[in-house]
Length: 215
Image 1 (cartoon, one colour):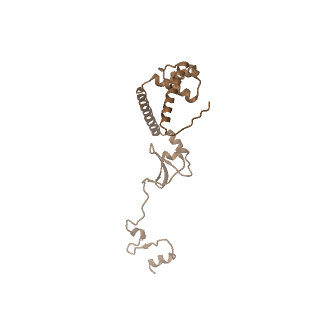
Image 2: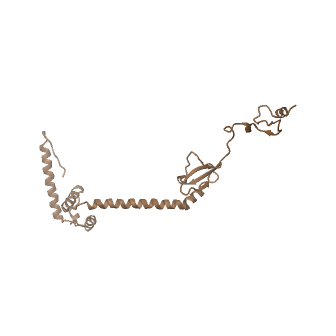
Image 3: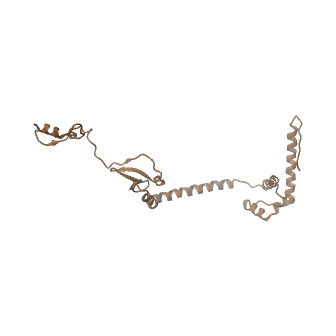
């Protein structure tokens, strides 16, 4: 019996094991994998980093990327690119700790803060530009006080209240608060103007109308 027959008889039928083939010339065992083409042979693991897909619920993953390095699960810091272990056995506490002390993240936070401060200062400049373009008009403000009293049915004495005067001064120091008699005249003037406008609108109506009031 040849060496091929001995080896073949020891291999059970249907087994997934590859039989050893003995080269009769050199009498050295070899495997069929060694005789396969290069593109069919098994690829050895390398140090290449492959990014995984999927989502984690912890907010710490906003600061890390999940990686696969040398067949091991790693977490790569988005700031300093440091690789830390990850997996269900390790939890995320060490990742949170790293985020707190990561020097590159602190630098990023400072840069973001500076950008926010610059944006806020720019908004202040734009706001001041709008204020500088505003022209104060005593008569306009006085008319608004009268309309406020009409709208909310405030007493005329509100213009004499110390608190209201201080409030008005804080909004516009140039505004000179009027007395109750002056504001009464302003209210009656507004009434006459609105009365004339109402009569003009009624005159444009071709039919008849009925007006009732509850005093």
